[in-house]
Image (cartoon, rainbow, N blue to C red):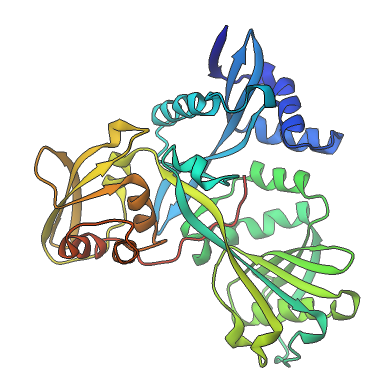
Length: 391
């Protein structure tokens, strides 16, 4: 007999065994502790055959700051099936269960890291976040001399740094582009998952934290996982800290959630190798809530109606009218003619700021009236979405 349901505390061992097998991971006490930390703070979905768990995944609840507007988001991870049950629609069944649960929990958005974009597009997800990977040989690190700062850099164990850097991370402008607000349990999960990560914190003359970087020392590589700064002095002194490792490593790598080029900041741009790669996908789960709370940009008075297609969540489908009056935009579902038609993926890319409607039109991804597309586009955010977490 086949059944699907929410996972409970009693299922943790079975789901852990499933993930270890499916992802070919080595069992260890450290892995078990990290997994349980995530499991205990997530909502799990499982498919059972004769009461044996054969497929499942986790939906981890996050708050996100969407260009100043808070939304609830479910981060999908550990999507796994035993091989003899893979390819038979089990994940599709569990996605239906998960989306119904998200609606019940008032979750508006969902993110995930895809093993296959095509697979997750079936469920309405679309690319929304990129990552930049910057690589440079140690001999090519800039030798810029910075002015002496009144502050200082202190090395700390990851766990000890969390109380100092958490607020800076959550409130930093770079984390306001649909990034997550990390709760303490998530920080602790990162500590368990990444025991080799270290932190350098910059304090100003008043002992206020003005910046930090999270890094890892591999045999030949100094790897920076995250760097957030509030001041020029913090940036300069943290770079000085990195540069003092120059003689010990063959190369330096910075993996950044801000997918931008940095070549122009170097005397010889050819020495920096940068790759911009797809990172995470996003999905609007509750379109009504998303459109009601969206941080629309100020615009002249206008009315626009668009038809939305969402095959996996038909409750989102229909005609949505956006009315702008006195700089404020409201949304409502109507039975009226629409000027353009969008899929939920096309709306996601445009609404997140990942790719504009006009760009999608130019590349042949959507059709319709240019005038109508322009009317809708002027209401949408223009920033670059950025995500600094992985689940």
